[in-house]
Image 1: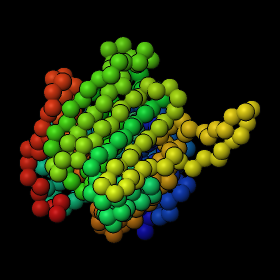
Image 2: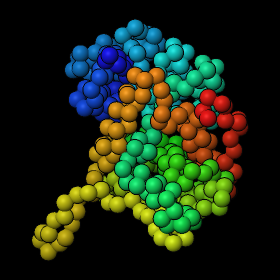
Image 3: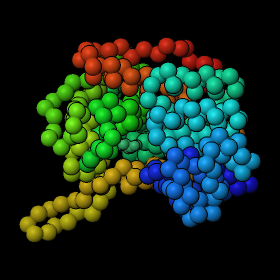
Length: 335
Ligand code: ISE
């Protein structure tokens, strides 16, 4: 059976996923699209032979749609996810599940009420081979117990509507999920500190920022978030253990020896840096949905990442160390 997917949000990542489903993933088809910008969705509908829906609720409830993929703006994720849950449809929600804990909790409540997992959150780094190699190394005890992590999340340029807080809820949210997954432990507290700001940031936006986390067992993590670094897209992660270190490699790129210099290209943006992880992620989601399962990052994972992001956002304004609090106990459907 071919899985009929309805996509809400036909901006950058929505278009990437639609192209991916059309060209790389067998057994699935984008049948319906919606976007707040009608023209964008209409163009995509025409290009891929999908139906354009002006109303996202109609798309979700249409019998042309077996499962929903949400790639709209962050603030709309929770409402659309709840719509899909209420329609009893599997739903892939791009990260973050929601920018605030309250909204994320509404998704959890809806899913618990439905009684079974339907949501997968788009934390594609969990599908990246190098992060998986690091996880296996840590799990296998190769570097002893992890003690410290040094990470960087650098984008060449922020979006034109970006804010200091959005660097956390929209970008560092990836680290907040993948590091918890990597270490298999939860966070205790977080503090955000600010170095001198770059002149290349937006008016009123502080950039870079350093997010410092303490985990439950006392591992210390520092994440440099620098979303206007100008030079490219650069993701770094180094885990320092008791007996060794494991570190993300630079993505494989050819080395030039030219004009008296040895050089390697730095990938310009996230879609290319994690292209393989996105392909594996969406393929796995399609296959799981066809089996009636959710095996990727759940709404609970999305909720915990948002809880940590909210503590970091609070620290941006207070400057203090903020405890990462999780207001509800883990519902049984996530065990
Ligand atoms: C973007 O939305 C992503 O998800 C990228 O992975 C991230 O690095 C970037 O900062 C976000 O804006």
